Each structure stands twice: as structure tokens, then as C-alpha cells.
Amino acid sequence: MSNFDGELVDITNEAFWTVSSYKPGYSRDGFIDSNEETFWQSTGPKPHVIEARFDSIISIKMVSMYLNVDLDNSYTPEKLMIQAGTCYEDLVNVINVSLNEPRGNVNIFLGDETNQVVEAQLLRIWILDNNQGGNDSHLRKLAVFGPSEKSIFLQNTKPQTENSSYIRESHKRSKGVDMFNHFR
Image 1 (spheres, rainbow, N blue to C red):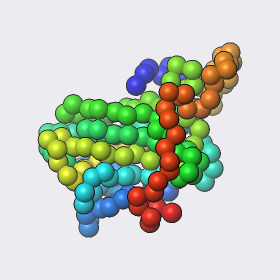
Image 2 (cartoon, rainbow, N blue to C red):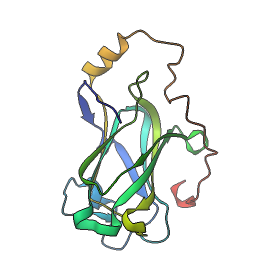
Image 3 (tube, rainbow, N blue to C red):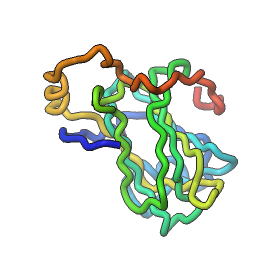
Image 4 (cartoon, rainbow, N blue to C red):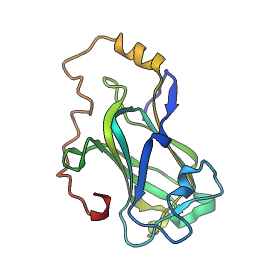
């Protein structure tokens, strides 16, 4: 995670969202409605996966989640992995995040010091573990942000280096294995 000095634009509604599972009455609508009182609840064994598919390749700067251990206890996600790519076959691990009893908005910046955004058509958020080892997860709000036109202009005026690929070079490519066939 790092600081971002440009403006952000909410691109959450530009994606088609799917989840690996949900408890009846607690679907994906619970995290995309921007209401902290509603939530998505997974069901079944971990990991749990949330997927955003965009119509075209888009610049993604930040993922923001509202998590609250006081409300959700062992349902609160604490270990996350975010992948990005254009399809399942070229997904790469962008960032792994470990949280300690989160309360409030958690902002996860996907770019690094060289590259301020991730260019992707497919974004996968893996919930690998929960507070106290809980099995199912609650997610109250989820938003995805891209850079504004102003920040894109500022970024494009910075000198480019030979390391300017859109994903950090330290991350290895995944095999694109799809554990959940209904995502395809």
C-alpha cells in the first residue's frame, strides 16, 4: 500500500461482479450497494473469490473494502490476494495483504512506485483467511477506483523507465487455474 496524490474515479459499476459462493439473502449485492449495514456472506470452504470483469482493459489504481471485526468477528477477512489480467490464462498476483482486526475502510493500492496503475480486464480478489480462522466471510462494501483524467495526464508526463510493465516484475504469473468453473 502506498500514498496516491492524484484523484480517483469510482469504476465499481463498470464491472460485472461474480462470487464463488453466497448464503441465500446475502449475495454480491450486499457489497456493491455502498451500504455498511448490508453485506455479502460466503458459504463453503475457503478460499472465497470475488471477481470483477470489465468490458475492456481498464486502468485500476485501488480496491477499497469496508471491513469491521467488531460487527463481523470471525467472518472478517484478514488475508487477501488480488490478481489482475485480461483473462484467466494471464492472471498475475498483484498484491498479498494481511490485516489485523480491520475496522473501517481498507484501501489497497495496486500500483507500485514505477507504475501507478494496473491495466486489466479481469480482477480477482481472493479471501484466503479470516479473523480467528473463521470459514465464511462478510464483506460490507467493495469499490474499485481508477485514476482520473488529471492523474493520468500527470502520470504520462513522468519519464518512463525500462521497468514500466503494468505489473510489478517481482510477481510471478499464475497458471490461471480456475477452481470455480461457473466463472467462465
